[in-house]
Image (cartoon, rainbow, N blue to C red; front, side, top):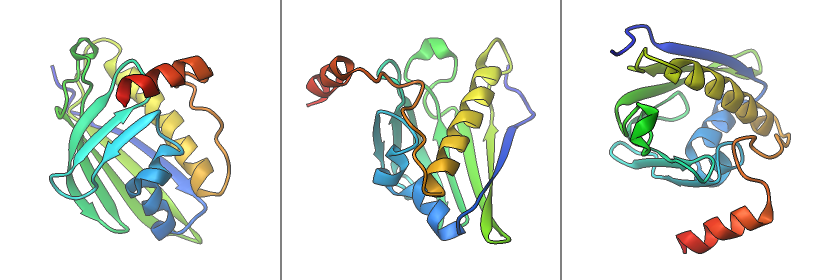
Length: 162
């Protein structure tokens, strides 16, 4: 069953909407806070694919890109056992200038209500938005806790993808 109540997260980032937007739309900047590999084409109809941990990938398609205010894309896991198939949910990111910074409001719609899916995404978005905040404010968020950090795992991944 699909939850009719969207998952909503909001965070303030002490950076301009233009700069914050670049961390949600430019692949090299996105990779600094998201995951291990990234394949994105941020334009309507463009691919959204993120591999945060070498084990499973998120796949979707961009629906709307309005610089520097909004990005909307579909979202789902390639690993069907997660219970959120590729493209089955919608993530909307809205950026609003506030003071000298930006309020980021993330709305994730159509998540299944059963099991741990919603709590998993809730925790994940809290972590990932905080990482985006740190990077956009000029900091280093450190390794993504979901990503393997040992060199052997990364080398294996690189060998498998080349």
